Length: 433
Ligand code: DLL
Image (cartoon, rainbow, N blue to C red; front, side):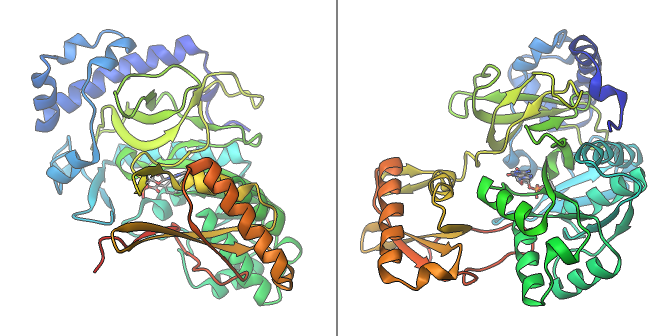
């Protein structure tokens, strides 16, 4: 099923509405948000200079620091009276990033989530359990209104309280689970401990996962443990929250609602726009947001775009799985290391499950990277030689990919930390005394 006709428009129609809305969005931002006026003035650009979609390139980028510098409400383009909802993303340092919505923004949000959940196969026959946090995080409330809008019976469970989560899932016959992929893995483990086999004893058939990257091994494990279709959806507080894009049943890239967002891929170093298919940093311009129009926002998320028509009938551009963030990079003994590189090495080794942890410390003046890796199955623990073999295999592969040796610790299944929200797999302890 396809929720709205705009998802099947041909490119000409999409581009026509994009240009109309881009002009409005630019005008709204320029006239109401001092930051945008300053940015435009600094390069001698006026809203009237945006005459084609190609002119988008002329607009300076917006970055997270712009939100920080305008904390709390300086990025809003409407008077506070018109704002009916405020969310914020926590961030590890400093002040949170604050975002606001008008009544119309909230309605648009519900519509865009309706598209995402319909693409994943959710209908009004479903019972949807939201195990994202409700609160300042956009995950819980964001999914909530869209799921209600399609007519699903929504259980606003929030994250945590895992045993109760499972009890309700059983008693209420939940058919759709909404959470981070790491929490889906954790819930399955707790269910098993309770003597419940999620595949046989529960009725969940679709997973709507987002908020963090999901490796192929995590997705495979979720699908096999739960017996579900594990779909992914993408979003970010600054852009609205969830609802920017989502998988259809073919899981071949997340469909972007292009009548509401323009996506570009840039080289993160030079800012140059890259052609279709190349991997780079995703940059998004919002086209319909009233309270918080965002122009050319640098998401730091690395991905690529395809404009090929999908088998599902949608014509919208798709963004492929996020390949990590450009600011995730660790510098270990001078070598640039992306956690996703490590993850892709681990994915190729069958004895290893989806749980791992990267710890960076200092040994005197030297950086030391330790990777704790959880075995997929306890049976490998029985033989020391088996463990040694796995360890050697990982070390060798990592050395080839990173050109760097690291300390590998193979640990028993179910010993590494589990997460109810977004997983934190990297601990950089170098600056901690
Ligand atoms: O995580 C919004 C969201 C909630 C999306 C629930 C989907 C579902 P933030 O807390 O602002 O917003 O975090 C945004 O999370 O820049 C990505 O790095 C990451 N992220 C979100 N969805 C995905 C995904 C929400 N499907 C940041 N795959 C983004 C990979 C994702 N990373």
